[in-house]
Length: 215
Image 1: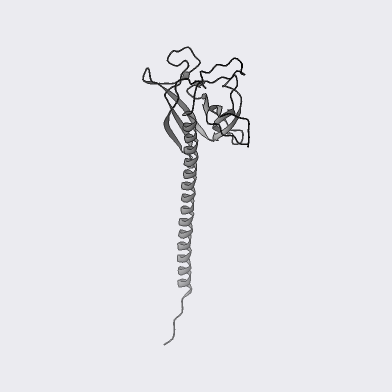
Image 2: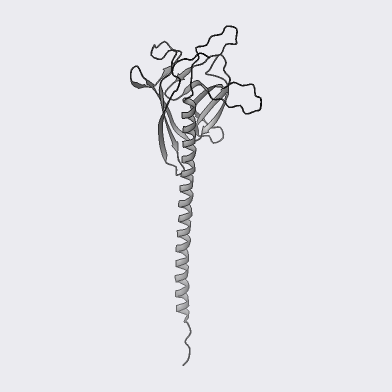
């Protein structure tokens, strides 16, 4: 019996089927890679946002006011000025970055939104100055803590009125705020995630030393 070979049409049909299946596999693989990259981008972005928020929570909890007055020493000011979109305060927790650095454990800190000169996006900035001077609202170096942030807001808990306030001025004349700190601070950060969508993170922190201390 004579062996029958494949006809040209059969070969063309088989080649077409193989091409279709190959194309489907390539498309499926490409979609899987895109999905993997999107998930990884969102996961990495989520980690960055959580790290920034955790740092803010930790540093705000260490805010303090000093009742110490020494006329023989260089004047240094502690303070707390909380606004809706900016927070400036003095806190403990400075970590020396150089061996035998002549710095204390106090620092001036601020959080606010401004344009990141590198990415030209609105970003969350953190200003820090080691040691205190006569103006806790200025000085130090500002660095980007988190890029591409759409919204930053703070609220301050007034334990006397039992309500959240949009502003807290420890140097002001309000008897509920003068020379003391809010017992809690609530913060909200809305950031652009890896997929281009925005997500809002809200948390709050307790301030451990709301009353002035004498150092």
